[in-house]
Amino acid sequence: MALGQQSQSSPNAPPEQPPASQDKSSNDAAPASPKGDAQAGDQTPVLDPDTELRATVQQSAGDNAKLIQNLQAYLERHPDTPRRGAIYRGMMQAALQMNDPKRALEFADKAVAIQPDDSQTLYLAVTALEKMPDDASQARAIEYDTRLIALIAKANPESRPAQMSLEEWQAGRNKFTNELYVLRGRIERRLHKDDEAIRDLNIAFRLVPSSDAALALGEIAEQDKHTDDAARDYALALILSGQEEVDASIRNAMRLRMENVWRFSHDSDAGLGDVFLSAFDKNQEMIKEAALVDKPEPAEHNKGATDPLQFSLRQVDGKGAVRLADSRGKVVVLNFWTTWCAYCKTMEPMLSDVRTKFAGREDVLSLAVNTDEDEAVVAPFLQSQNFGGTMVFADGLDQSLKVVSIPTIIVLDRSGKIAYRTQGYAPDGFVDAVSNAITKAEGVK
Image (cartoon, rainbow, N blue to C red; front, side, top):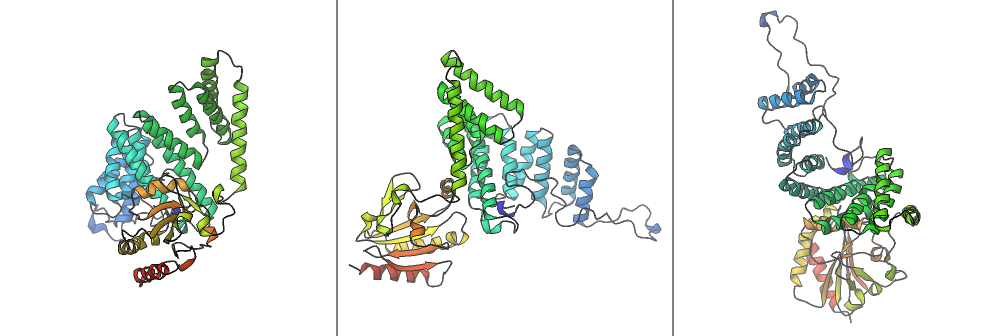
């Protein structure tokens, strides 16, 4: 099930059980033996597969072990059922509730093989793998977690339930993605990949400031004997935990860790109050920032820019920025895209054909301009996608050029003026139209 299709539960909630009663009402009783069937003796009436599956789940009466046994028997009777993926997912969840991760993993492998892009299946598979003690399972958990991060990054907001606002959908996706990065960071730490863990935990914290991320960062800082940093992280975790309604015993443990790590290096509580107040102030600043803006402002160095050639666009891989002023005298092809835009992926091969036509030409620059509100989802998305051109963030250029739909293709001539624009999905004659626009723009002095 895609992220945007969840309606009853938040996107960060584990999938519900059982998976067996989704098509017909679970209140439908199994049909009784027809009247006048005395000649049939004690023959059991033949049930259609869906009714039999509902009966199989109901007969388990909430007993997870019995549910697994009954569903295995059902699969033996119906090995080609189209419900196999959902059934294995239900068995996996039942095994996890029985605290049997090894068996859950067995069902997870079968479910993932059938539904490799199902977010619920992948989430449960990561949960099962994380509980396994061996490094190989932990590494596989990272693999599945990474796949799930990329899958959520591609989720289309247009698929959200009608009653869910775009803001609610985005908040849910950010929260779920935060949890996935925290989970991957914890696993990386177990595998002694601290640099990768710190990177993921910081990404998680930027998405949604959470006590889990702050606590894990504090643990790494304490382990590395950066005690002041650890105390600050623990203080922030303690403050955030109050907003998240974390259990009091867990909050008390956070407080003890903060005090202990500070006393270890300072031999007293002196100064600890200042650390706590500093963490409190930082949290208040984050709350204000979240309330003030719904969409990130253009990068500071682009504020006030009106001409395209005044913009400097950060590269997605972090390797500096592209100054459009340096492109004066060149033709610039701007492809505005997002991770959730299905048409962007469809049009990429056509854009590749255009780039091939002008390959080796230093006077033609192709920029793939990302306009996602959440920049953290872009890099994981690109790990599984083959997008060409130089990848940059929009940094306000989309607003300056009044880009209102995705995808939008704009060709700037040698003087930085718009020579061509097309928006939306328009495949007919696309390659020739853009190629001709580039050739025509080359003639502008």
